[in-house]
Structure formats: structure tokens, C-alpha cells
Length: 234
Image (tube, rainbow, N blue to C red; front, side, top):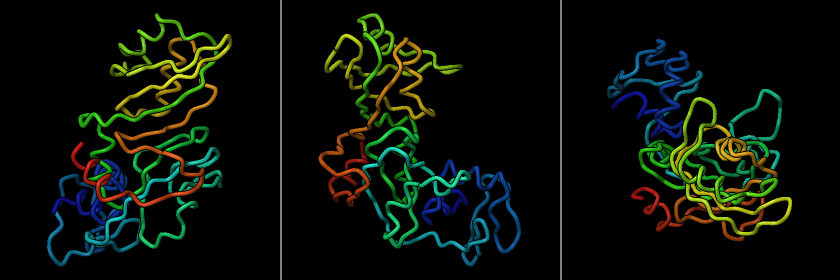
């Protein structure tokens, strides 16, 4: 089995993040550091990540969390801020967030120990749309909406076409839903900034057809069997 797949199946990270761990020298096989992508793990090999022995197989866990503001979407933080893993500390399995929501964004976040599942949800080629509800500053004109729907330059990267629907336009702000399938850092905020509307509030309310619903902030639930199968095949 390829080393990155082995790490993903152990619930450490997605395959893409596993490649970063390998390149950075955080992975050992039989006590020896491995930095070559494409390395295979053979039967009987002992694999360690950050000094901890891992096993490829285990119980798969799929969690939907309503992330509050003020939490970082990482396993640890050098500024000693609270992380989303603090909210699921009672789950015995080692899980990690699928994608990210920034510190000032709330809403639906999926956590799992299934690396292949995480890869499918985060890689743009699979076109899994994420739905965000945003309050933006100022008037969101038809011209600006058209630009978002076509794709905008957010600093060296032109976004794919977005689905944009204005829910309510007021004199000084607008409530809007935007659907994207990419996951660049702070992408939604940068997209609105690119057309001249600063984001005041941002919440992710759905991933594909899996919706946040009425779950309270800071609470989580297990994904249903139907939701898991849907996300694996969307």
C-alpha cells in the first residue's frame, strides 16, 4: 500500500496532507525517515508519524460539527487558541477536520479519520459544493453578482464560477448565499472583497446536500449512513 494511503487510512490526515508529512520528514518506516513520495508499505513494516506508531485500519468515524466563532480548524495552535478538536474531545478515535473554516467563520464542519473520504470532499475535481450564508457590507449590484458567478481573481487565482443568490438587500448590507466547490484559504471573503463588498458575517450551512440544520453551536452529531454514502458518491 502506498505510504500516503496508509497514513490516510490510519486517520492521521488526508492523502494530500500525508504527502506534506512525508516531505517534511515526519514519517518513519522501521525506524528510518522516509521523504520519498510513492514509497510502499509492506506487510510487517512499522510506520511512525511524529514518533507515534500508526495502524492503517480502524473504526471509521464521521462527525458533523457546528463550529462556533473563535476556534481554529487545526489539531493544535501555536497561539494557544482553542481548536475544533477541543469540541470533540470525548470521541476516542483520532479524527481530523475535512477542509477548514477560518477563525471568524462558523458553521458546518465535518471531521473524520477516513482519509479517502476527506480527499473526495476537498479536492476540487469532485465538485462538492459548499453553501455559505454571508452578510456583506454595502449594495451587492447585479454587476458584482455577475462577476462572482463568472469567477474572480482573488490574488493570483481565478475562482471557478459560483452560484450566488441574494436573500435580502438592505441599504447598507446584504444577506447572500454563495455556493463554491473550491477551498482556498479565506476564499469566500476574498471573493466578496474582489468585487468591493466586505464580509461582515460568514457561516457555512451545507456541504453538498448535508445541511447544518438546527444543531446548536459547539455541538456535533454523527453523520447518518445515508449521508456518508451520499458524500462518498456525490
